[in-house]
Image (cartoon, rainbow, N blue to C red; front, top):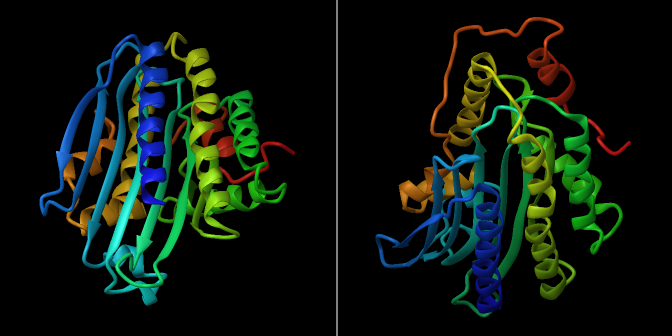
Length: 299
């Protein structure tokens, strides 16, 4: 079970890095690491100061420990104190051009109580898109591809996981969505391992078809300093979410993970401004009003 998943995840990391490198013209640098306790490790790949990607990280990790951290047992208290094994691929891509959106994807597999007669396993993951300037055709393409990824389960699953994504990637203190959403799922362990594993693969395999066409279309768009300023300001929201709410970040830090790899999702440059409000009727205002709201993009 674990070997099947780990082999797929490594190949997914390879294919995503290859596809993004072909567009950017530069390659990801690999940093292989071992957990400080010796309990597993991973491969962190980062592309910095590229032609298209200002900073991008694609991480494969496979770690294990004596007990799950608090972030993993908050909603599953019955798992407290159990040995665990966790593996996954997680990525964040921050393009240089303000008109090209940031994207995030994660697929993961957990086993709790692997040393017992009745181990508990589940899959999770998804992908979401964070634009700085809104384009309806990009959001529609993103969600069409997300829906295609779900079709191997059922027609209803896209709507369920789309709503879960909208609910999860929300900043309560800002009363804003982080982006235009996508998919988010967790605790998937039914009807059987093969079906759940196939679905996780479908989500992972649909990331590049969802993102590359958007990145190809937007990365050469002419922009001015004011567009860049807005991008850096909105990246601040991304940092706020990852450090305050993101369960993956909390799990990594609480389990003694490698800090450099966990925080690879942070953008290279970011800005905060006091009470910054875009002018009504501007493209920046349209992002907040028309895109950073939970809505049916395929309706």
